[in-house]
Length: 134
Image (tube, rainbow, N blue to C red; front, top):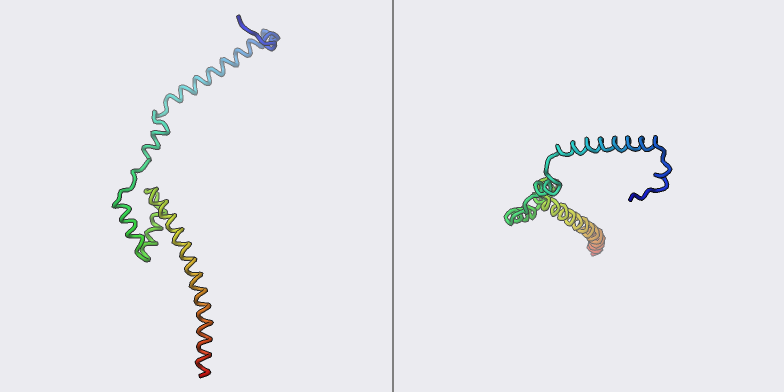
């Protein structure tokens, strides 16, 4: 017992044949596309992620990183090298964060030094003026 809608009841025989031709054409297209999909490699996206996933850095790599980054000028160069290195994601992110940290404190120290120099020059000028009076 089929339940027919009012649209199906009102369809003419020519329209039914046309609809059947359209359905057959759609089936042929999907069969062709699914056949093409069968030729794809079997690896899933999860397997590809596992293949590209890197091993976590070992302790001696981190020790070397900390030793190098604390050398005054070479440390900055080494951190820039790590920050733009594509091989080690965990050390790259750490280097970027540490460079930002160093940059913030460099700017703060330069500001404080500038303020102290400004105050110190004023005091030095007053001291020289006092010495001339003697």
